[in-house]
Length: 119
Image 1 (cartoon, one colour):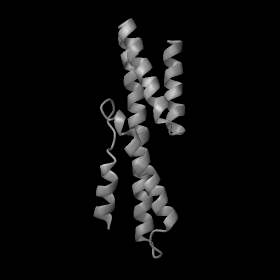
Image 2 (cartoon, rainbow, N blue to C red; image 1 turned 90 degrees about the horizontal axis):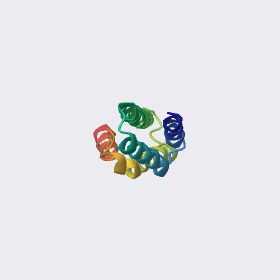
Image 3 (cartoon, rainbow, N blue to C red; image 1 turned 120 degrees about the horizontal axis):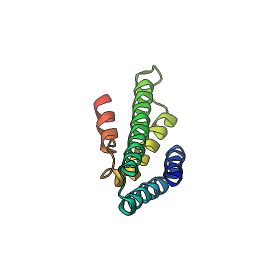
Image 4 (cartoon, rainbow, N blue to C red; image 1 turned 90 degrees about the vertical axis):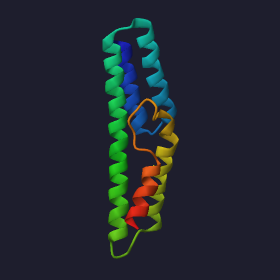
């Protein structure tokens, strides 16, 4: 159980530092641990971690879309900084798309659809 806690903490820290490689590493470790132990509590811990990652990314998507909407609707319009921040989050999601087979995450194409709808 101590190992699972380390994986869960690692996933949280990796999300916050936006390190896709480490998130994938920890999720793979969970899978390997489950394959060895075959205990439901390992699968439950994996599921909890996967939900955390999905929730984290959903929050990032929500914040990014609200910020760009606010910027576009302002009297000054979207600044270069606003567009760069939106693009950064889009690229982040694009790089995390490899996790989409294991997680419920917003595809990067949703960013393009959102901006197209907004404009």
